[in-house]
Image 1 (cartoon, rainbow, N blue to C red):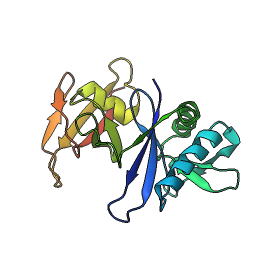
Image 2 (cartoon, helix red, strand yellow):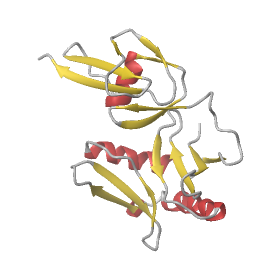
Image 3 (cartoon, rainbow, N blue to C red):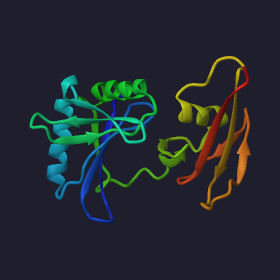
Image 4 (spheres, rainbow, N blue to C red):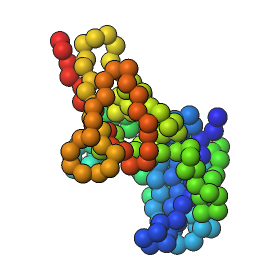
Length: 197
């Protein structure tokens, strides 16, 4: 299975953007700057494919809040892609590895021509981070993995989860181990982990 680049157009400024999604979970691992034309956006994708094979093109950075992220740069030093924020450096390194693995032979899907995959992809928020999922039904464990990458072994950690589907400040419900929930775009999950030991 290959990763994929998606080209889309902003309704705010009419500029073209691309994002790189990892094969399998289709998580967004790289976002582009805006381009005034689609041809320049396609050139940007080709530049990512070429430069992602060179580790020295990745610039590792730390935001003011202490979170880690990286830029992918072209040979002339121009930023051609930026990652999401990672709470840990190792997460950032995993993200770099994922871009290096997925970018070179990724497919290109032009969402400005093709119909967006409304029935296949759902954009949700987990602990303040945007996530894209491809299943209409997620289990409690699926959402914990989206929040923390892995579920702690054994019974030393208790996970609690709230969600809201229609905006507002108050949670609409809670989920516990074994529960499932029907997903729609925009649903917000908050997951916390408590160590019992």
